[in-house]
Length: 125
Image (tube, rainbow, N blue to C red):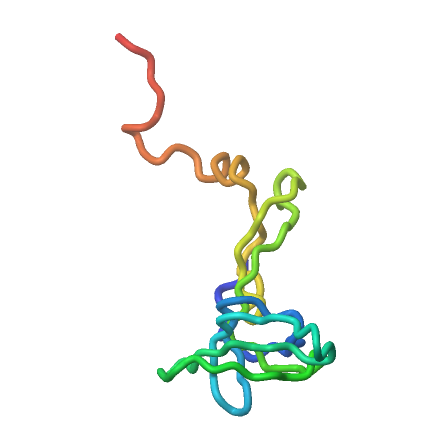
């Protein structure tokens, strides 16, 4: 099992951005509030950005195939459980990577065991 690593930049295409992603855009760290395709101008994406240090939200058009440096990219991925091989949803940050092998709820409960002697089932007297 690996420990958490220090976040580093991960390149991401503009058309793959989602809300709450944090990226470097024009040298500033910004959070993506919304990303929409532009019907009248297909090669571009309209980004609504919020500067991380504070400031007013802005809109900007950027090329669809432009690569940005992602600093925080939270995603929910369907990964195979290490115990039973079932698909289980995992919340991970793509820039950090996975810290441990995913376990489904059932395998996690079996691995943890009882929480304490007061929760261990016993016979009644």
